[in-house]
Image (cartoon, rainbow, N blue to C red; front, side):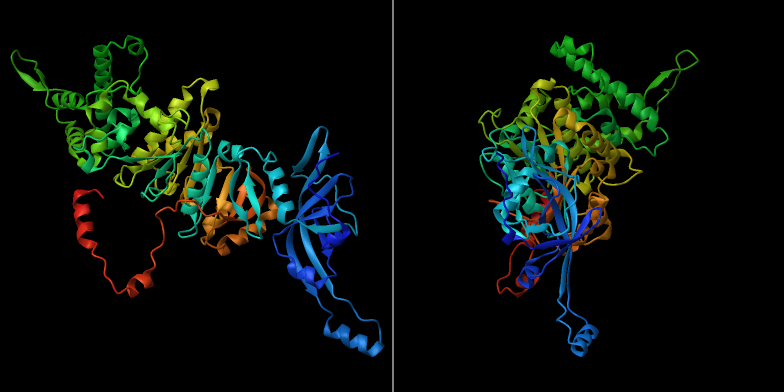
Length: 584
């Protein structure tokens, strides 16, 4: 005996099948009241020609055909019986529900193993029955297990919308929507659910500092150090994050310090490479790290003295070597060719806006600092020293925009590298939530320098992250401006209102051919409504996002109300002062 979730009676039927095509049926509805209750995109259940199976369909079109004027006139002339209305509903078949297959019960498959017969009943899928069905679809039938639920179905607010959480993070996801559509709200809802898990583990890249209001034992906040933090003595234990220059890969350092338009750029990159390797070797030798000395490379995360590297390159830039005649001197091979590199290094080192990289406290130069950083950012709730804060929110609001892609991608790269070098049986999966992704994962095929380096990092994580337990959730208001390589690896979309045709096209390409019409919903979705498509939800679903416990600080300013207020806000003086100090 199966625990079947469908137990309809004939009196529950909306109507009966009148016509059958390959993947669509026409249902006749004689009851006008039932016809009025029907809605486009609502799910329905049809009796199958096979026992133990039901066919699932989605309403595509509703038609009420009243008798035409000519038919009414003919009826009056001939005295024939009244011509009945022909009320029909077109349904597209999208899958088969199977009550039992071997030892398995209640399965849903995106295939059509049969078609309904003429006069087969059609039933609405709503309420508790819809909730139970969607649990089956999302493989969450076990009510005792923690479930991922972003909200309720828009057409039936009593039915909770469940997602397959494993597939959502394993196969990457994207949360997209125009400004004011509810992206931040959706992200906050997702973060809170991860934070409630016993051993949740995720990092949210908070580009504008809007998620600082999210609270709870499962959430920990970090902030990339600003100019006001450089002399404060605060560090990792205080939630102030530094990213010392020695964590940058060689390509990143070249992108930051070498002007590629300079004719001497190849020589500058080569000499910097030699100087950095020598500085890292010196650090390892002085620290007695013989086991690393034999195998380290220029990209190995080993601290070194950048000032010493600068001095060595500067010496080469003014070096004089013995000439052909005894006692004479001539300019060295690199005399004057490294001036631009030396100047750029000096500017970067002294720039307080980049103090979190080049003016980091001494503790960041300790050999064990990287391990402490990785534990703070990558450990799940149980592995944290205080068993709190599995979700880490990193505030990048004070990072200069020109280096933002590099800084975000470097942190992501550290997370990926640590996961990659962890033994497979010991990895604890982590999700990277990339807010405002279009700023640092853009769709620019000819990107060079800092942007190219950032793109390379996220491309690799998108392609290979699943194997190492690293998932990506791309969050953006312009999906068409996000790297197609990354989006192509996102097999789940939470699409809120999108008004731009190019952005709508990104989501439409995710839809099955017979459900392409759902893309028409994107520009008319209400604030907080989303269309969910992908592996985490076998059936595309329109849901209303549930309200998060803590609201992100991303509310839209009410222009007219503020202009109508009697009291003025004295904020300009403090804003100018913060601008000058480069710190909020």
